[in-house]
Length: 284
Image 1 (spheres, rainbow, N blue to C red):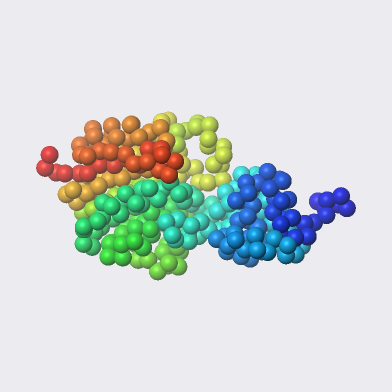
Image 2 (image 1 turned 30 degrees about the horizontal axis):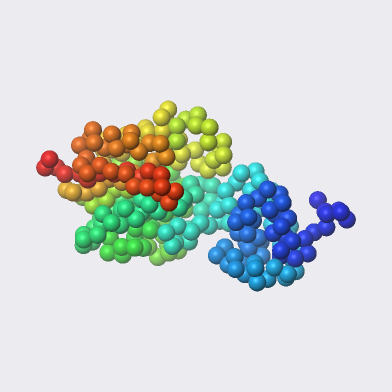
């Protein structure tokens, strides 16, 4: 509401200050301000160079509406309609999980496993927005990359991203490995891994719960993938799984018990063991 005591911000800098004063993270406020002004999210330097520019009333109205939604917990990526992941600009909305920077750890590991293989096959399980599959296909144009998701809504988002980026990922609607072929050099997945009743879930209420929650301990989907993946892996193929911050030891145990070799974990950007995986060899 605007009063004589609280006039509309008249400059870009004042609009940013007003957004931060509402308790919005400064980076989020900058991204939403750029969006309201019709500028790209990577154009934050523009805000510094144009901080004294006039703030149009229409742009402030649009920003105020977005700020209200952000204060209610809606992810910035949904408000912007896009999220950068591994150098790709992905369109996202409430039908899919927001791609996280931590998942780039999984992509980098998968790309290392594909090194030295000509025209390898890779599979992304639970693709969501298509982030992992599209990142792999972009980095390895020679690869055949498949992606599976149980959600038709998620696949609609992923397929639209693939078309827009011109990346020939093949998508299938299925429950985990039910839709998979055989002979994959890498199977990578960022499955649901949050335990039902986890105290962090309310903060994620705007994202699809089916992409987040996996049973009492958060490992139900990972157990299923670990059990069934060997049938679909090539000799010497890798299964790589993202998991929760405190689940690395449990996931390594599942992999070792199933017969995977060279079982190990990789750290995310914060130094937390975020991904675990192993290699499948039919000759032990």
